[in-house]
Image (cartoon, rainbow, N blue to C red; front, side, top):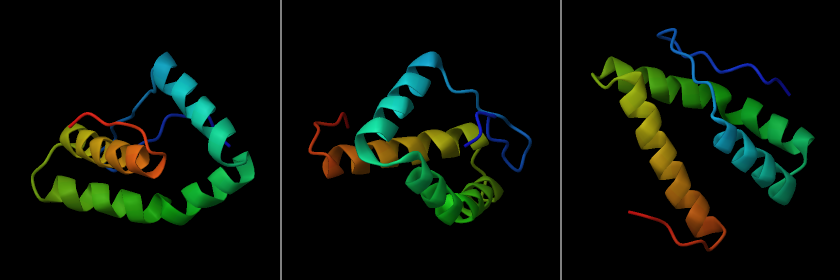
Length: 87
Protein backbone atom coordinates (compact mmCIF):
# COMPACT_ATOMS: atom_id res chain seq x y z
CA UNK A 1 0.00 0.00 0.00
CA UNK A 2 1.30 3.46 -0.81
CA UNK A 3 1.11 6.53 1.37
CA UNK A 4 1.50 8.92 -1.57
CA UNK A 5 -1.29 11.40 -2.10
CA UNK A 6 -3.51 10.55 -5.07
CA UNK A 7 -3.06 12.69 -8.15
CA UNK A 8 -6.09 13.43 -10.26
CA UNK A 9 -6.25 14.03 -14.01
CA UNK A 10 -6.14 17.79 -13.62
CA UNK A 11 -2.98 17.50 -11.52
CA UNK A 12 -4.65 18.27 -8.19
CA UNK A 13 -3.37 16.34 -5.20
CA UNK A 14 -5.21 15.55 -2.00
CA UNK A 15 -3.15 15.27 1.15
CA UNK A 16 -5.26 13.59 3.85
CA UNK A 17 -5.39 15.36 7.18
CA UNK A 18 -4.18 13.66 10.32
CA UNK A 19 -7.81 13.03 11.29
CA UNK A 20 -8.56 11.49 7.89
CA UNK A 21 -5.51 9.25 8.20
CA UNK A 22 -6.56 8.18 11.72
CA UNK A 23 -10.11 7.48 10.58
CA UNK A 24 -8.97 5.50 7.55
CA UNK A 25 -6.53 3.47 9.63
CA UNK A 26 -9.29 2.67 12.13
CA UNK A 27 -11.67 1.70 9.33
CA UNK A 28 -9.04 -0.56 7.76
CA UNK A 29 -8.47 -2.34 11.05
CA UNK A 30 -12.19 -2.77 11.67
CA UNK A 31 -13.39 -3.91 8.29
CA UNK A 32 -10.86 -5.60 6.00
CA UNK A 33 -7.30 -6.74 5.75
CA UNK A 34 -4.76 -4.53 3.99
CA UNK A 35 -4.55 -7.03 1.14
CA UNK A 36 -8.31 -7.00 0.61
CA UNK A 37 -8.37 -3.22 0.79
CA UNK A 38 -5.57 -2.98 -1.79
CA UNK A 39 -7.42 -5.41 -4.07
CA UNK A 40 -10.63 -3.42 -3.70
CA UNK A 41 -8.87 -0.13 -4.47
CA UNK A 42 -7.40 -1.68 -7.61
CA UNK A 43 -10.84 -2.92 -8.62
CA UNK A 44 -12.53 0.47 -8.30
CA UNK A 45 -9.65 2.86 -8.97
CA UNK A 46 -10.00 3.22 -12.73
CA UNK A 47 -13.79 3.55 -12.60
CA UNK A 48 -13.54 6.14 -9.85
CA UNK A 49 -11.00 8.13 -11.86
CA UNK A 50 -13.28 7.92 -14.91
CA UNK A 51 -16.17 9.23 -12.79
CA UNK A 52 -14.04 12.12 -11.52
CA UNK A 53 -12.82 12.95 -15.03
CA UNK A 54 -16.33 12.85 -16.51
CA UNK A 55 -17.75 15.02 -13.74
CA UNK A 56 -14.96 17.59 -14.13
CA UNK A 57 -15.46 17.52 -17.92
CA UNK A 58 -19.14 18.35 -17.36
CA UNK A 59 -18.19 21.58 -15.61
CA UNK A 60 -17.66 20.79 -11.94
CA UNK A 61 -14.36 21.45 -10.21
CA UNK A 62 -12.26 18.63 -8.84
CA UNK A 63 -12.98 19.93 -5.35
CA UNK A 64 -16.76 19.93 -5.93
CA UNK A 65 -16.56 16.45 -7.40
CA UNK A 66 -14.52 14.99 -4.56
CA UNK A 67 -16.72 16.60 -1.91
CA UNK A 68 -19.84 15.19 -3.56
CA UNK A 69 -18.29 11.73 -3.85
CA UNK A 70 -17.11 11.90 -0.23
CA UNK A 71 -20.58 12.83 0.99
CA UNK A 72 -22.19 10.01 -0.98
CA UNK A 73 -19.65 7.51 0.32
CA UNK A 74 -20.15 8.73 3.90
CA UNK A 75 -23.92 8.23 3.57
CA UNK A 76 -23.48 4.73 2.15
CA UNK A 77 -20.90 3.84 4.79
CA UNK A 78 -23.12 5.10 7.61
CA UNK A 79 -25.99 3.03 6.25
CA UNK A 80 -23.83 -0.08 5.85
CA UNK A 81 -22.52 0.04 9.44
CA UNK A 82 -25.77 1.39 10.90
CA UNK A 83 -24.32 4.73 12.01
CA UNK A 84 -26.34 7.94 12.08
CA UNK A 85 -25.38 10.33 9.29
CA UNK A 86 -25.65 14.07 8.80
CA UNK A 87 -27.66 15.17 5.79
